[in-house]
Amino acid sequence: MRLELKEITKRFPGVLANDRISIAADRGEVLGLLGENGAGKSTLMNILSGLYRPDSGEILIDGTPRSFTDPRQAIEAGIGMVHQHFQLVPVFDVVEAVSLGAESTTGPVATFDRKTARARVAELSEQYNLNVNPDAKIEDLPVGVRQRVEILKALYRKSDILVLDEPSAVLTPFETEELFGIIRGLAEAGTTVIFITHKLNEVLEVADRIAVLRRGRLAGTVEPRDATREILANLMVGRDVELKVVKGPASPGDVVLSVKDLHVRDDREHLAVRGVSLDVRAGEIVVLAGVQGNGQTELVEAIVGLRPVDSGTTVIDGHDTTSWSPRRVSDVGVAHVPEDRMSDGLIGAMTVSENLILDTYHREPYSTHGSLNAKAIAERATTAVQDYDVRTPSIDTIVGSLSGGNQQKVVVAREFSRPVKLVIASQPTRGLDVGSIEYIHRRIVEQRDAGAAVLIVSTELDEVLAVGDRVAVMLGGRIAGLVEGADATYEELGMLMGGSE
Image (cartoon, rainbow, N blue to C red; front, side):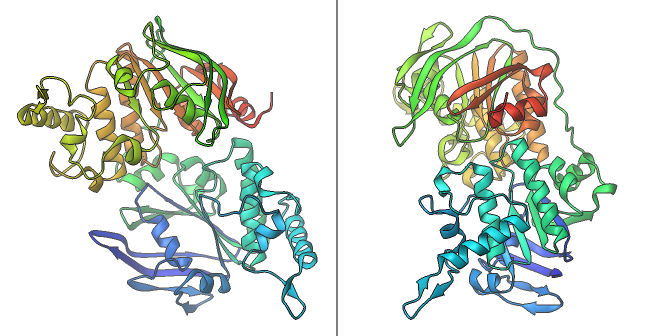
């Protein structure tokens, strides 16, 4: 099927999400849809999949205008969407998960025809080289296989146009390469594939054409053979971007953070961190790599005092901080950039200036005897906004109204605008455009060069290899390997992340 989106416009209160966007994809073509967080990619695809209705513009399939009032109509028109966050029932097996909502039935009481459904699932799995066991339980499958089940769901519903939203976000490098092979196979069989991503290398590798969105508009359409990472980055943000992290060799000093045999439980009381031991020295960046969900979140929360420790110890700058509160940990000189800036890093309904003193409001000169000093707070906010290039109309602007990149700059400005001995940053560039990534990386390297110990948690191998002086890979709650940054490779880290030696 040929897909055309013509002059699509979609407004939300105060936001023009899509501004007269026109793109097209032919049968058997992989169209890469590239753009920063908030560029309008997901809104455009939600319109295509029937979740939203456009304010103006039209969708054409094989030249015929189509209008969808709900996702079922889009599915019936041959459009399937695989969301970044999988929509599978864990206790179902593959046949049940794939056929849910589109079940084959027999008999007068419409009994689920499992035999027919299973045969169809097995046939599709073999036809597209998906290698999925129809009888396996979803909860027992690795993340990469669960994604294939989502693709099977779309194919089962006879989708001729398949939209993949950030499909590699939770995959190991090896699983990502397998996914690319599947995408190429789908295209060769005649499926039109739209591949949504913000990763420059991936879109260059797998796409036949690349459409770049910037601030709700189509910034350009290019073919991979005519494009480079630099060209794509320029289209995404509207200026030249330094894609390599500029940093000299590390000069490690004394151990600042020492974690010994740490055991930590997750929210379900399952052991998420299993005997982790790790040292981070002053003047070095250690990156904790791994697929999301291998204990990194719980480890960081335990170090900064947000989660209790089952056993083991955490020592920061010579202090046993194992049972300390978050404020005590912060006051000893720890800067924490959490992985979810809006849930854990900022208070969205408060102003920029108020968010900039969340960790120091109880100290002079920002408060005296319980009374806030408005002048001192304003002076600090003004300086931080200038020093960290926070693009905001005013220091009194509500922080929730800023872009993702500027929200992250507020967090970094707050945490780095005081003397720190240890920086802990979880997914510091998640969802940011390449310009903001460049800026955040530069600030992190500045902290290292000023003598701070830096621990970064990242699932992005480009980031891991770019900033890490040493790289520790977490798998199943344990440290699977520790590699010198200068010697680390995609292949070695990918194998460690996937559990191979």
